[in-house]
Length: 268
Image (cartoon, rainbow, N blue to C red; front, side, top):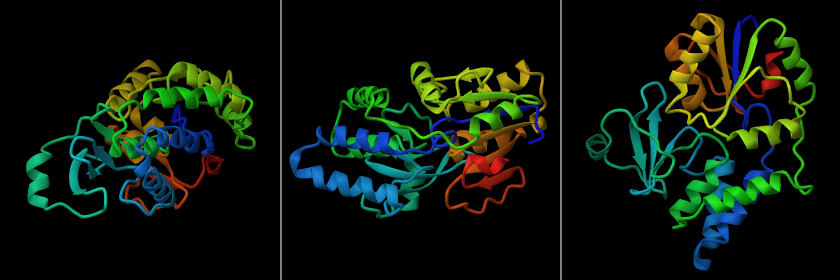
């Protein structure tokens, strides 16, 4: 990787485990009305299998219970579906969703990674308190019951990369979570700059611009690496940076600045 600045996402990029997502889902499921708990489980499993209208890269409008397909380059809504997958009339969609979407992660959710499947599912089934379940999951992640497997050789590869590039992590996780995850993954002391609670995608472009300025790097000398097209890939491309999109199915992306890999280890 011949770049002067490499910005990595964390969840789903520098580790690939999903047990904590399942724990989060199970905890939230207990807050769902008993009559709906089986449906909650079936919906969540369908999301993970790619057989549900809710998918990473889409958005969820809590108030309207609508799943939104958005253009990742403009953040404009291109289609909307009901929870059951029925498509809304396009004229109605255009009337309701005008301009660029703004995400507040309470009423309008950008489904950025596996954390959001349980959250969105819980919101659909009427759960109002998701934060306590999130906190319980974080406690689980630092207990002896949770084991997160580091990607083999990743630490050494990152340290080698650090010899000729500025290596940064930008994540929506908070600083305490990042510290715990780095300890679990053996990545302590690797990154020279850590941006936590980044509020991607809302702040992504602004943060990229700050990093480019801080390190005195031109956009074409920088690359963003992540598993969410809206959060990490589109903003980089719009700024003139390169990007590496991590997706297990390696979808075709018609952008010359974007390389698609199934795991971060394919960078080396």
